Length: 516
Length: 109
Image (cartoon, rainbow over all chains, first blue to last red; front, side, top):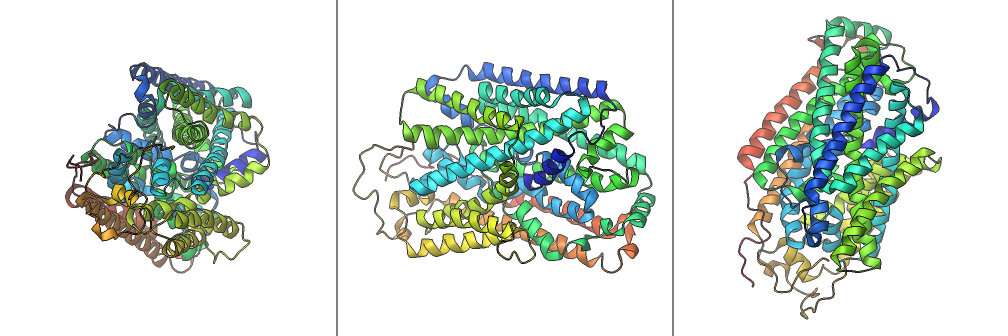
């Protein structure tokens, strides 16, 4: 999931670093985890082999969008595994354990992420991206908003800061879990876990990411299904399990612990505004044809709804077997370690690692492309393919290494950034993305107002500095951002003609259109 | 990115009639898909929340159970399954496949 719930996870984990002993199946866990890691590295080197055949002139295109030829399964998992992270595997089952079934209900909002992202913007983004040779969602927005400097800089900085914070949170959370399950020290665990991502993103580019993501998606699916089936067998019959759960704490079986409005705002944040996440849009830039895209929407709906229902629900069902967990975030690994054979514990850790690494890798690609295209090439414009090639590689190294360095000793300030990261980005980008694509009248000034306003009001509402009407702050952020985007657009001059021609027109404009 | 290409004077024209620009049919289709997708998502959201809260009213100790799980949750799983079928119909029958080449006709205006 959207790592909105990572903060609970990292905060709890940060205070109880080794409070839980999950080293019960050390040897099998280490072996399974090692097999997974070696496989991902192998995929990385295999992708490099392919990448090395690409011509220097096309390097950047191949690196970030891989020639726009992605098939169904890559699309499914690039979107699903890219968006589902430690939140889905760890944080949300933990919340389902401590808050109850209402959290499982809220998480179901993400089930149709492939359908919503690709259905809402897939076709349009795919065609326009080919028109202007866009390598990222940012490229597309920058073009649409006339390369407006403040828009470009603020969105680039927001992406760099918030995504880096998010990556650090994911890395810290994953490393703590590896630490408690394998007995490795924090730093070596972090380096092994993090450097694998750096290696396969840097040498393989998007090919490395997409080849790895299919393997990671399959690992996640296997881990979830095996865990869920074994869990169902253990608690069978379910009726008795729920009687025991409800007898102890009846509030965890009813949605009424939250108001319907609060649940609604969670549905908004996890489901309705997913296109506001720039790394979720990557797949719309890369699909081969709409037939594959349409199939990916359907397959993705099945995959993610099974992931979400099974793993998050497991957190709630876990109360029947482990009613007194100290760290609720560790409910899934605890179930695996305490009650299942060692290899299942290993598979679960591999699944968590896969969920985190796939998310981090796709975010690293977004950060890297932003570093090259929004910062390096703006400050030092160059057309030299060799320079662009080395800049691309260096940017990816930086995007991957900086979060690892920060994660060695995460600063206090980071907690706040993580708290606001994904919600802030979503509140900012939702309307400028949607209206930019479907409303001709959206102007660069309107988009800028929506971008900044969404971010500011989300933070104010979420931090309870202004009323949030008993809902998740994202609702206030989205509403304000929408009003600002539309209002400011209407009082400013319509966008230049060539932009509308590129984003709507049937015929190729006579002016040469270049983005680089 | 830096664009140092000679522009026609009309390039940055902001006083034009947007209706004069002939719209690519594929974008008309994609807008329709977008509206249908949002509609489905919104209906799913309200149906899930309504059923969850409606079928769990009263004392949490007395909520009905179906197949051993809270009844409202079973209904939510059912709604999710039905939505997957709807998505199958939408993506395989309703949404039209289009060519994704940048321009359908390579002619210059």
